[in-house]
Image (cartoon, rainbow, N blue to C red; front, side):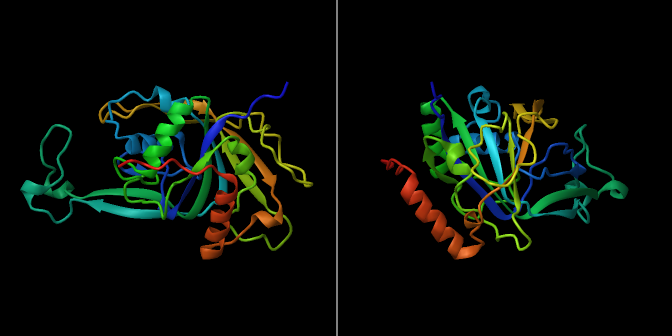
Length: 274
């Protein structure tokens, strides 16, 4: 008996800058090379209008698979806060006092991904939850951002709701140029084994994706400001060849092909009464 494919949402995360921290603290804020579960769950919670103290169990139950269209490049920002301010306006310390003049300037280093683009599949057997998340991404309660508030998406995040999201994840147009020197490899990251990816390629894969390649601590348990908690989860990775026809470059040409694909294969979203 063939298992019925799960329903899910397809998202496009692209913009001038993105930042998906995994080991961040105040002075040093890193970025992963792909969207994290905590970042995506936080984006859904913002769209739904949930307070930071709200439970996350339903959102963390969503399964997430990431396709790396363009990996982008890592940029490091030398960031300062509080320099040159008068004494009564300097940064407040943890005990509620103002920092002294000699230590008034805080220096931090922050990493970003520049010119990166990702396509995500969020799958679940809970169709009501998928409907709520889709509506929130189309008409978010609070603004959506790509990991940090300084990183807005370049366009609509939600591509559509489909019956078999992994099928479309490997067939949708890629926002990348066709490799010049032979077939290129496209990276997929998931929280579940990736041997189920319906890849139709004559070239061999780099691993079957059924064995996790390590753990990443990006499973959110709480976003409460003073009680943020994350737990590790297994990370699965698969590097595969996709047909040359999948590569559609950048700009208007890619967006037109993406729109045609969506119009042909995706169900039309329900109209809002708002």
